[in-house]
Amino acid sequence: MAQRRSDGGQPCNFVAADNCWKRYIESELEAAKKWSHKWGFLKTPPELIEDEKKEKTKPKIQLPEHLQIRPVTPVEKYIKVNPSPPVPKTTQGFIGWRSSVPGLELERCFEIQSSKGTFLKDLKWP
Image 1 (spheres, rainbow, N blue to C red):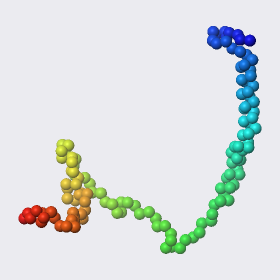
Image 2: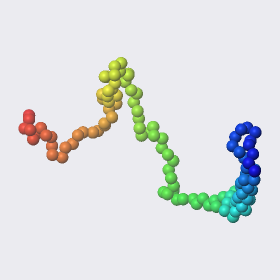
Image 3: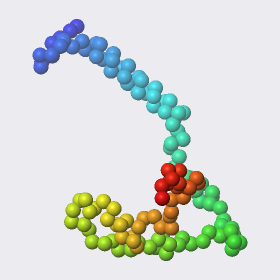
Image 4: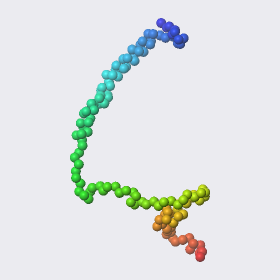
């Protein structure tokens, strides 16, 4: 039997609503029964997990000296950065301002090598 709600909404069939609620409760109970079969491994007590971790630790073997890992050398020992010259006042001077100073160039010990020689010889320029 359909009745109007007091708030003026759609008619409400109490029998249909009760059947929906019963189906919902039945599905919840069925899911609760199946949960332990599917997800029961998640219920392992934390004490058992901690004991398994303790058992899996391997004893450390003393390696010969030539196989041991050497301690990390600080980067500052190999890479030395010189102080920069003063910052240029214009944006035009900002382009290449560090590499234009002879002691601060980025390419060190670098020369352009060509396997065929220079193209000036091909053009027969002096």
